[in-house]
Image (cartoon, rainbow, N blue to C red; front, side):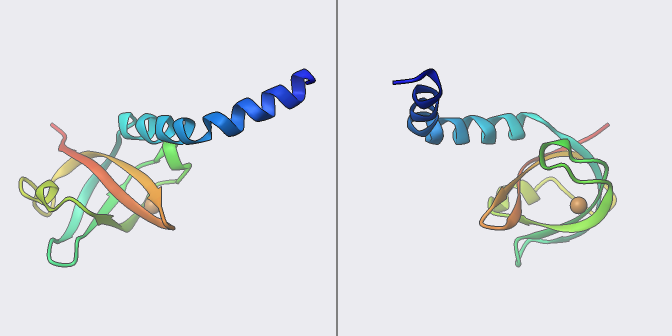
Length: 101
Ligand SMILES: [Cu+2]
């Protein structure tokens, strides 16, 4: 097996774990923003955010999906936050959010 083919087989075998690793890396990379709107019933939060390096997104105001309702508990409109986002099934899902001081 050539080095190139071996490398490809290795990448295929490790694909799953590399994806998991990428998700972890994104979670560890927090972006900054300010909460504009919270809708726990719909599982949505609107954030005016700075650059999000993990998904290569420039600053803007947009809606994120939140799967874990507990994340809403300590948050309110106007809060400055640091948060992590991952792409999942074409949606941007907020996985972690903390109040910034
Ligand atoms: Cu955005």
